[in-house]
Amino acid sequence: MKKLSIIVPCYNEEESVPLFYPAVNKVMDTIPDLEPEYWFINDGSKDNTLKEIKELRKKDPEHVHFVSFSRNFGKESALYAGLQAATGDYVVVMDVDLQDPPKFLPQMYDLIKTGEYDCIGTRRVDRTGEAKFKSFLSDMFYKVVNKISDTEIVPGARDYRMMTRQMVDAVLNMPEYNRFSKGIFSWVGFKTKYLDYHNVERVAGESDWNTWKLFKYAMDGIADFSQAPLNLAVWIGTGSFILSLIGLIAVIIRRVLYPDSSIFGWASMVCIILLLGGLQLLCIGILGKYIGRVYIQVKNRPIYIIKEKK
Image (tube, rainbow, N blue to C red):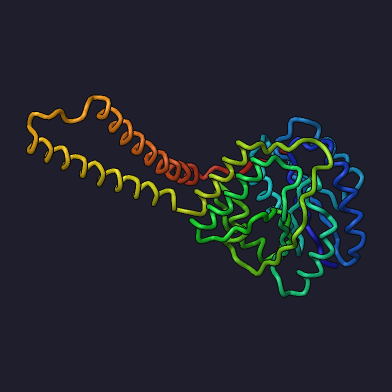
């Protein structure tokens, strides 16, 4: 019998955990040739998430396992920890809030076991129920990142996907500290098929992903898989230098031709200084973003720290 490892990152999901397990188990019962292995990753939750996970383990110690972090390290770290812990022939990543419909598991398995695909992913075709501004930012992110990056990131793609052991091992061979899984899944390659579905709302609780966190996550994704911001800084600097040079030449010519004329006022000069200073700070900030990521990587700190594992 093949084994399917189900990775479930959790952060403050005490209401969702008791609902997730029976919902997925009900679907797994329809796949008799797959044995489930649950890995709940408690990402430093501040509520009773860990307690609920331990209750599940008491009921099913053979199949339910968990990893509990010493603090909150983020979903990407939790996902990586789950991939490291998983021992299954196939591995699937799911959100505990059931926004990733378990009903797709049989279809995923039927497709992946043929050997034609290495990964069966999912993507949302709409964002019904989400704030329009958040949906707009998400759509713009996919458009921008796919234009400036060599790695294609499928619009609407979810982390919810079933992967072969070979693909999982390839992902684990990328132990970078700053992780953007959607980009990593695409970068490693392998043949992937996507299943489309309409947005599903959470079964319980509230999402921890607000607009600001999603924006920072998007910026991390761009920095991880594109050097376009660095190139932009070069072009901004070059353009500013050329414009300044043209302006300097124009001032000299005007001074020679019209010695008695007033050449610009102090207000204009201040505006120019502020413009050039702002452009310099922008370029330095972009450069610092990349240097900071290199600095964090070379310190070689662990991606996460385990407090408890069973």
